[in-house]
Length: 83
Image (tube, rainbow, N blue to C red; front, top):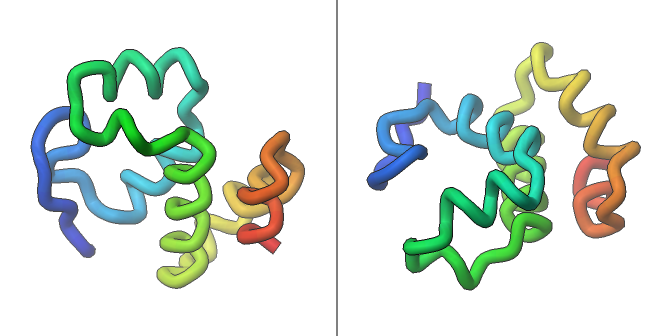
């Protein structure tokens, strides 16, 4: 288990759990969560790209479905990193 440092909605989450949560977020949820955060410079697309790279690096069998879903997603940047 790799814990995630930080505050707010992500504090104390395991890295794999956080990556899965980010990949499941929609734009509205993401915007609400980061509205008053320094992370507001980050885009959901970039966060999803980072999350799929992190999942690929940790490579658990449970993440195969998440990676398959990311490969079929709307964002080319995320699809490329999920391949």
